[in-house]
Amino acid sequence: MDDDPHLADEEDVEDAGEDMAQVPGELKALRACKRCALVKTLTQFTEQGCENCPFLRIEESAERVHECTSSYFSGMIAMLNPKESWVARWQRIRAFKPGMYAIEVIGEFPPHDQEYMAENGIRWQCKPPSK
Image (spheres, rainbow, N blue to C red):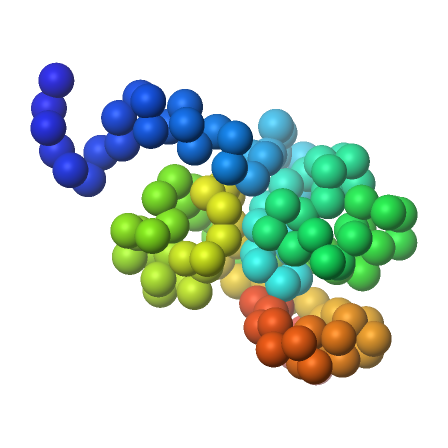
């Protein structure tokens, strides 16, 4: 076995499984969380919400899923080790759970969500659509 410090051991990957965000089970109906850019299927967001953003309560209704996620995103990265990943640092997602993330998310939160996050010092990833 190679002792490369940049590669995760099998045990590390297994241990991280409990703290990992759910990864998309298919490539259809993908959406990205507007706050953290986590990518999951529409069904996964509807059933489990966003593991990084429980305060958004995405799983409460289909309307919340559509308000807080976007189907307009570009690129995807798989992040396994947020603390040591230069990509996680570059994307500003080091504080989030390992998972699949969009590189750029297009969309806007409803005003009440923007107010809540601004008042609580919570940054979000999405960019408004160009007009």
